[in-house]
Image (tube, rainbow, N blue to C red; front, top):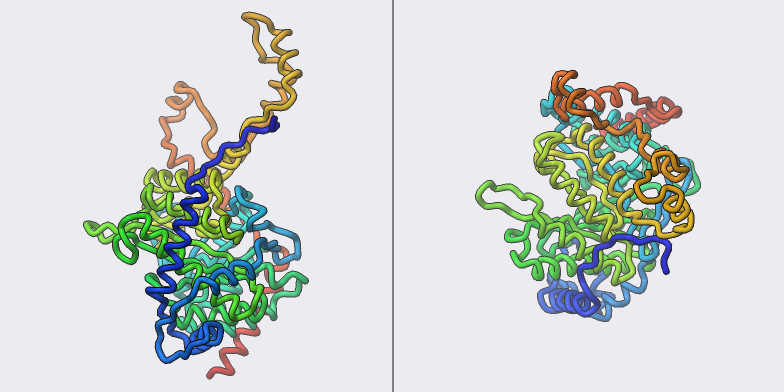
Length: 478
């Protein structure tokens, strides 16, 4: 008998996984993929044995199977100090990794709830927050700083993140022309022996079925330098993908396989993380909310990557709230719990509101507590050492109690959580304290934590080094 009873979700059986896979192969071989990059079309042409006269590329099944076998099944990621941070892949399913971010244009003030343009200072404090929160292993590009020109926003954003956290970074490069400069900056700043495995480059194709030139450029640069690439598609079912889940899942899976093939054509054995950000499309509000179906699609995508033996990247459930509020909590709980019960690998984008427009420190802090509770839940029930419990039962007898038993006293240690935002209180205490609202308690907690954040010891040195290099880059361009 297993010593622990572990809760889990299983959505697709083997026959259903094969069905989705075969649907995707049909899409790739009969509908094809639009490839906007001349370089990528040439790679496909050489592999398939056809010319590249058309942007439409039809990918045969045998090339897909080759790519699945060529890509690494597992990845080990490090922090910028060279310490192992986490692992992703076929051998590590059921161990979801979370990160804060991503590319928000605004920042929601944690004291007033006002939504402000995102700045470099917000990038610095948000990165320090991600560094301080225990349940996050990744800091993703938190926002797009508005107080620098678009031409250098990627450079300053990368520097501000790198200097203010030692955790693994997921980098989203907004300006296609900044790719080589960002990687030059990273190389200049990075001195640890695992520098190629402390960053993940995040790219998106254009759904449906377009490998756009900018995405291909980012993939080529990253793969040539040895950086892992997260290739993730975003869908709105009923708009960019079919309304039925089977159509959306098959189409999105086909896009991921197309990206995988391209990555292996660029360099066989290139490390890839594949996944989807499924959303819906509400024509009445012109928004793209999460729904129960989107979370099912997230789980199904994770199971497909597990079927292929490939690392997975999924959605984070952020974007529904207007603050750290009930709509946000609904989505966060559903996403984090199902992700950890399923096979979701990396969930890198926690902490956004207003359809991922505004980064909210309060949201990230609330989510940190949710993730901790979810992880405690998914550890399951231990079934070992019943003999010790039986001795306690015999000792207490009928009508007795277990208030002073050694097991109870040991278990009570788990209730001592000083970082729990909402400590329990009686109705009398609640009334005596003026009937405080839970949201007020959260704001108080957030304010105290944000005011206590400190930069890493080497922050000033890294900032100075990076600022000097960026100024040189700007001078060369001018």
